[in-house]
Each structure stands twice: as structure tokens, then as C-alpha cells.
Amino acid sequence: MTRDMNEDIEKVVFSEEELKKRIAELGKEITEDYKDAEETIYCVGILKGAVVFYTDLVRSINLPVHFDFMIASSYGNGTETSGTVKILKDLDYDVAGKHLIIIEDIIDSGTTMNYLMKYFRERKPKSVKLCALLSKPSRRTVDVNIDYCGYTVPDEFLVGYGLDYAEKYRNLPYIGVLKPEIYE
Ligand code: 5GP
Ligand code: MG
Image (cartoon, rainbow, N blue to C red; front, side):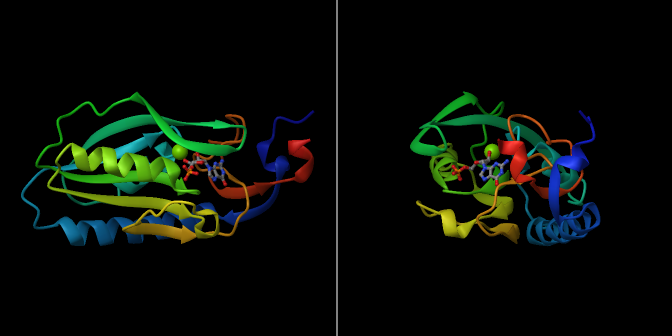
């Protein structure tokens, strides 16, 4: 049995170099959009999946930002989410009157983010925008507006760069698809 995670990957979807380039573009766009903002910008990362994207993205934003994180889990039976979202770790700060940028790994059905965006708006921020590295529009069951989207992807299960399969592969530096025998 090998411990080399690369051997479990069938194909690379976004290489390390490609991700680096796209994230630099997103950071530049965000920097441009908020360069005249007077209120503090809070970058809110959704743990754990967004953590790798988060750390690269914030370093490509050339403005002062504050860090905050949330942990949310969507209830469901097996692979389908039920629509109920439980907050396991809330924001550390009172974000009323602040600019929020929510940073997420992937928007799939949209259930989690649809719930969280409503939750954030109730905290009365000055503004709230969503930045997602990946979006699978073909899987959407509820509407979610993505202000900054890295890539639109087809309905394939992706791992790496924060995305896991049973908690594994989050630390792969690229995004890929697993070999089918890995799921067996
Ligand atoms: P949603 O509420 O939009 O259906 O769920 C989004 C969450 O589902 C993501 O934050 C992620 O944890 C998980 N997810 C959706 N698609 C994928 C995928 O292709 N790969 C992995 N590893 N997780 C996914
Ligand atoms: Mg997630």
C-alpha cells in the first residue's frame, strides 16, 4: 500500500500553477473593489474546506483585512443535504457596519451558503459578498449569488486544495478527481 496521494488521482483538474494564477486575479479584483472602503474588511473563511484557498487569497489582497472563521454543518441523510444548517463555530467579532467577504471552497447545492448568507445579513454588516473558488451550477437547488467565482465546474467529485474525501486529500496542492477504485 502506498502513502503517495498522487497515485489515487485519476486526473488533475486545476494544477498548482493554474490555481495560483487565478487566485492572484481574484485578489487583484477584490483589492480594486475595496480600495476606497472606509470600514474594516472581514474575510470570513468557512472551515475546513476553504482554509487552503483562504490563506492564498488573503495574501493576494493588498488591503488591511481582519480574519474570522465559521464552522457550519448541513444536516442530511447520506449525500443529500436536508436544508438545515447548524453553526458549530460562530463569528468571533461583531460585524455590524463592516464589510464581509465570505470565502468558501465550493458551492454545490447551495444549501449551506444560502442559509449562511441570510445569517450574515442578519448581523447587519455594511456589505456582504461571496467569494467561492468553485461552483457547480448544475447541482444547484437553491439560489446563491457568487460575487467572485474562481471556476465553474461540471458535476464531478473533486479533491485537493482543501477539498476532502473522508478527511483525506485536503493537503494536495492541486485539484483533481479520484480514481473510481478509491470509493470502493
Ligand atoms: P452545498 O450546501 O452547496 O450543497 O454544499 C457545499 C459543500 O459540499 C462544500 O463546502 C463541500 O464541503 C461539499 N462539496 C460539494 N461538492 C464537493 C466536491 O466536489 N468535493 C468535495 N470534496 N466536497 C464537495
Ligand atoms: Mg465547505
